[in-house]
Amino acid sequence: MTTTAPQLPIEVDSETGIWTTDALPMLYVPRHFFVNNHVAVEEALGAEKYAEILYHAGYKSAWHWCEKEAELHGLEGEDVFEHYMKRLSQRGWGLFITEEIDLDAGTASVRLEHSAFVYQMGKVNRKIEYMFTGWFAGAMDQILQAKGSDLRTVAEQVQSAAEPGCDVGRFKVTPVS
Image 1 (cartoon, one colour):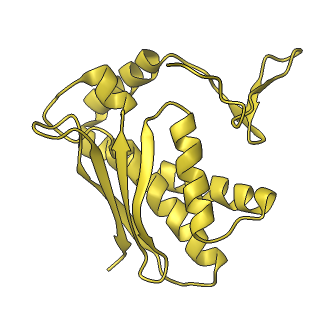
Image 2 (cartoon, rainbow, N blue to C red; image 1 turned 30 degrees about the horizontal axis):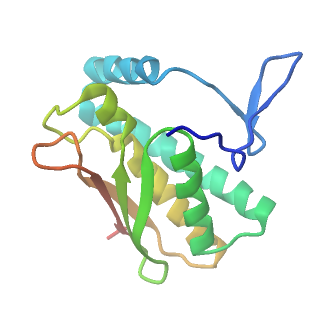
């Protein structure tokens, strides 16, 4: 069943063709286009190096997004994280479900269902959604700073639906040691 998403407004400027959601300019590209480019860069750089680059870029972007959205909607704490998971889920990356979050401990567990990467690449016997890890730590750290905490976190993918015997992805956020 396909439905429209009025809760995720997409505005298109009739003069420039620029798409905007949540006051941010957006690009709308086919999933295969994005994933094929992702795989090409991974092959050129190696998965480990590419994951490191994406982690830092994603961290910075998530921090910025959460900061702006919290301010715009008057959100704080766990509500910011849940809003972020909702928006990520509405944008076609997959369905992100917060299974656990504890801001005082600096921990969270996120389950990913219907991964765009797995849909495109299939069972490739490895973790392939590492692009998201920096997003979770960046979101968590922005929320922590906003509440006055000096605690900082790191995120890792611990399971992928692209691996044998797995049907969902899983991510853990933990304090930096």
